[in-house]
Amino acid sequence: GLMNLQLALKDDDIYIIEVNPRASRTVPFVAKATHTPWPAIAAKVMMGQPMSALGAHEPPSVREPGRHPRAYAVKEVVFPFEKFPGVDVVLGPEMRSTGEVMGIDAAFPVAYLKGLLAAGVQLPNEGGVFISVRHADKELIADPARSLVAMGFKVYATGGTADVLQRHGLRTHRLEKIGAGARPNVLDLMTDGDIQLVINTPTRSGWQTDEGRIRATAVRLGIPMITTVTGAVAGVRAIEALRAGDWGVAALQDYALAEPTPANA
Image (cartoon, rainbow, N blue to C red; front, side, top):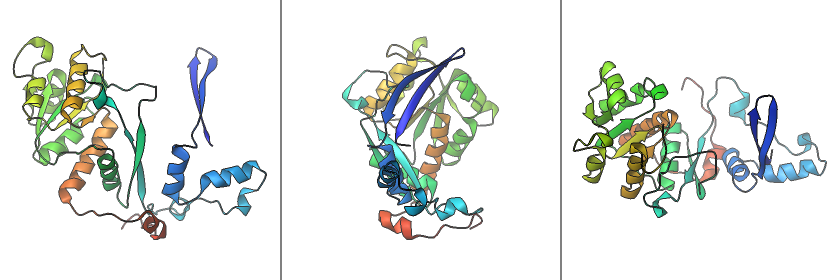
C-alpha cells in the first residue's frame, strides 16, 4: 500500500521499528512505470469506491504467460557521499539517499544503465577493475569477472578473491592488502588512474579499515563502486549495453503504447 512497515524479529517477539509513508517516492515511481495513477486510485478506494469501478488492473505483460514487459523501469538512488570526504560509504538499514531517478527501456541492462547515468554514475567501457568480496560472494563473483575479462578489462584482486578467480581460470592481477605495506597497492592504482571500477561487498566498516579506505577513495576520485553481487551482475550487463552503443531514448508515454513482446522474440 502507501506505507512501508519495518519490523524486527527477536526470539518470538515482533517489534515495529517504524512506519513510513511511501507516497512521496515509491508510489509515484510505480505509477509512472505502470502508467497508472495509483495514488489517485488508492485515495478513491479509501473513500469507498471499488477497484472494479476505477479501471485498475495488472498490465497485459503480467497477466499473459510467456510475455515480456513492454519496458523495464529501474529506480536508482543518489547519494551525498562526495560531500563527506574520508567517510566510509558502506550502506546499512538507515536511509542515506538524497534523491532518486528512473531509467526506463525495453531492455533491462539499458534501463539500469540509464538509471546510473541519471544518478551521475558513469560506468567504464574499458580499463581496470578492482574486485574484493566477502567469503560468501567469492564463487558468485566469478561469472561477472569472466564477462569483464572477456570484454578486455584488467582485473585486480586481493588474497582469497584472487585465488577463487584464478581457480576459475581467470587471469587476475594479485594485489597485497593495504595493511601489508607492499606498493603499489589498490589505493595507488586508483590514484594513478589504473582502476576505473571497484566491486567490493563489505565485510567490515569504518574509515580506518582497508575496505573503508578503498570505498572512501573511490568516492573522492569519482570511481564507480558496486557493493553487491547482484549489482555487479547488473552492472556488467549494463557495461555490455554501453559498449554495444545501440540504445536510444524515448518519451515515457511511448512505453505505455508499446506492445509487450513474446518471450521467444
